[in-house]
Length: 452
Image 1: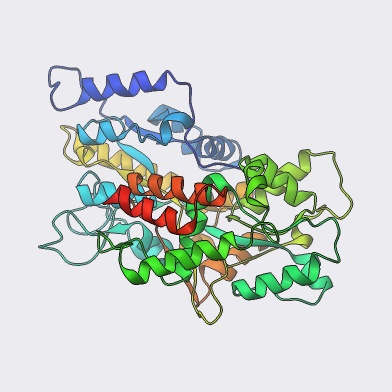
Image 2: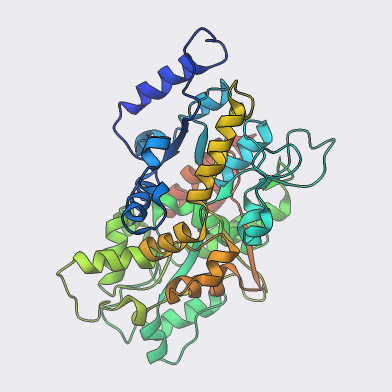
């Protein structure tokens, strides 16, 4: 898979920690940063796209990008630990521009660590109407002084739209004159019909155990449950406990017939194993991020192994649909797992703030525009977040994902809970249940106990 994780040599951590110490407000005797320099965190995809645009774009600014802006890679092992929190909390000038997920934007924005992207207090003045509403909402949070100001404020500019969807063997469903499932009963009925007749298909559904918590949120919401509401932990209510158990039991009851058996689930911890199994034709459905189909194209292009009954043409054989909800539930849900560009608050109050914020605007102009987002759609299947880019989009696969999932009238997009500790506890217990080490009831009680 094309993981949106920030990568670099481990030595970067030393640079970050030293930078946080040297450039914090407590170190006023140090030499200031050059007036024209803006520092940002980024991942390999951003780097590759800038390099590509430097070669093909008519805009010379991409060729001079590294001269104007200083990029900091974050290694995968440290990304999950949120190493740049130190820079934010100490009001460090490094980094000034941060690549953050929507749930981090919520947490940091409410803490007052991020500069507002819109409104009278913003030096950015980004127009949220330029964004598709599904993703603009995900990157908007209540400001720290919400008691005196109402509504939500845009705290980061999303690079695109990303979330969990249901991929399926379009060719096999067509062969048996079946439509994509809208609910879990329909998915099970499709599997009961096709699996006995297609001997190479071992599983009705695959998901990746190591990221099951993300898949589960979308399933759980479909059952009418929520974990957090108005910044309050509400999983303990009877309604939400019932929804949790119903959702988890729905998944676990599929094990051994439609999902792999609990004892076999661990073999799909690897992203490569999941891709290879689906490409070999071993599964009808897969729940994954919307980049999955484009990742399969890359794997298929590099692979010389051809399996009878397997996938040879992604466009003809793979379709996409929303994640099912229970029968009778009109709404279907997906989680927004997009990344966005945020600016730490210190950038707006630094001694050279006017120059810094002017450079931030130049940065955003280059990395949040139609050309950049259309190239991202072509390169890795990113769904544009800009209205103007979506209007120009010609990639049929990316358009289908947007129209079928994110823009469908019955779809509700939500951001998973922003608490890292909460998500880690949920993940630990959900994976234990998936591996058959914990009953649904025991998993729920352990979550409630640990979060009490």
